[in-house]
Image: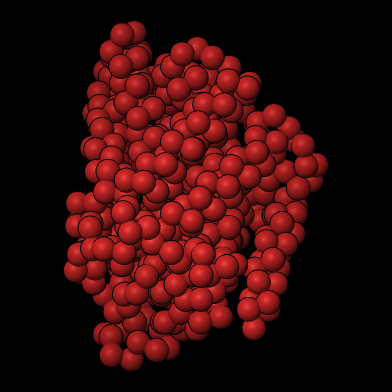
Length: 445
């Protein structure tokens, strides 16, 4: 595919994929996990933010050395080997990215329904989520250049409500004393600080996740070996600063009890309280647009999932999924498969987390646990990168990858500490998905 994207689009991929939904969606969940402990919640945002910066730095170093088709899969192949790269690509194409896309479709529909005062668990919300899923895939499959421009535009738009809340919410909270009250008040509960931190860390991981998907367009970036590393590092710092400032500003608008109790309406309440009924509603419209921008960034990557395998002659029907349409210059068959997989995981997300649980003990949060799995899959890549990169200075070869390994270990531990036995049921689903990938690999051989 052609070199159609530059540095602004790459940075907006990082910022636009990460920012836009989780910061609104997970704020109340973090407070619930910490029983209203605001400093502990901010610590969770800071820890996962630091993990994102460390890992993005290591992958930025890899990006200066390896460039092929699809970022992360390329790095897995260059560091660990072709077989491992196949399973990383299979996981990304079939489980990880479609799960995030489906969750974002529902979150976008959720806030749209909140804006209109509709029920977020009924058929109307799910119908809207399905429509958003289809329309965004059509946009990326038929007009990839327009999808890139949409990503840049929505990234700029989504920074407006976050910046307004960070500044105005903090100012209002300092004047009315609510911020000091929120930091001093903790809800009574039996939950320990360590348990609350682990659970909130896993929740925050969703809000920060997606930045690695920016590497999926490295073959379509102009001067990718310079553009992508800059985008990863700059984008990571923008995201971390924005999240923490927004979270602090939120404490000046509403009390922690209101945030925990209001659920999906908490963000709307906060903006209306700071800016007034009408202005708050207008700003909330921007939140809906920001969620759509995040959905678009994830879909942009998801549409290239099976294509990244097919160009290596891997996965199911590689001759079908590596086809690039001569008119749109896009892998249309891969995009169609992405739509089908995302729709399947949307049904699961609804049944497991919204309308269910339909699946008994196998009902897990598909917006969170696949993220932790990916951190586990980074580990062999970081180890092999340290072993093979003999020409790099010690800081880039050993120090940062070692910190990244510690970060990955912490995320895996947090998943078990925060979710307990649910992780084992998720790993059962993960094993089935990877087993199907193994069957395709065996059939090819």
